[in-house]
Image 1 (cartoon, rainbow, N blue to C red):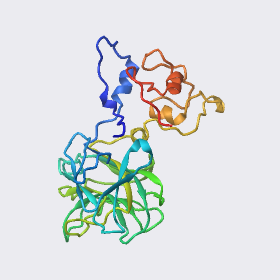
Image 2 (cartoon, helix red, strand yellow):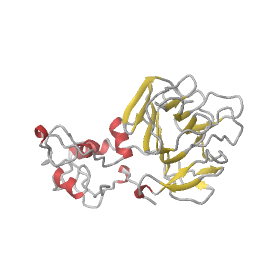
Image 3 (tube, rainbow, N blue to C red):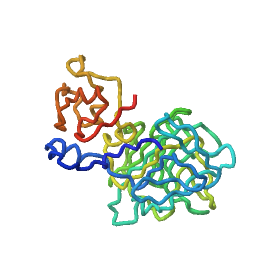
Length: 318
């Protein structure tokens, strides 16, 4: 299995000194645990391992296959079969109510995300990452993914609670999509950058079962409309992740190639890595030591360490 970076896996070792105030602040801003997390790295033909807090495995429906992902460290990915039997998707075993899409007191929020590599047009315009099994005649349902009816094809769908033309997902390129309802607005992030926002609400069809890689629009089970391409690193949170947290999820040590402090001279650390780790890319903070571990931020960067974690080292992927 691929290494899973989990900021909640910190522990207090015997005799460890008390964190500094800055380290505690960084700790409190770390990522929450997802309810559902499919890495698609364990294949048995029946179940899909769920490394989220709900733990219950997903169930393969139809001709799902696993194949090459974005990069070797990602392990393998789900592949749909839109051009074949068009019946491949994952049954999560959870309703939208359980996953935070609605059904409570109206305060529900969520963030759902995945990496995708879309193979382009094929049949129906809808190529959904997140969908629901609703049966014939029921259309009020979750459908987040790609709607192939314009160049700007990212689509936040909820029937009467939609954002169309929410960003361009290119054919044949790994792209990260995140869909969010923050209690007021529905929001789409494309490769970690907000691409669309509009007033929204919880999902009216929250009580239906959520699926991954298919679309149940007016379809008897099995739902069909399999995603045309690959999906990986599926995560659903019942929390509103910030833009910085979404960047952290899609690439924990995001490198941009930019280093622009000091009038362009830089401070020796990649700006994207600084943002992902709570440092300020607008100032020279190379000599800082927020985790009080005896290493400067620049030394942490050069060594592949986390500048806000005094316990361990997390290797940067280059």
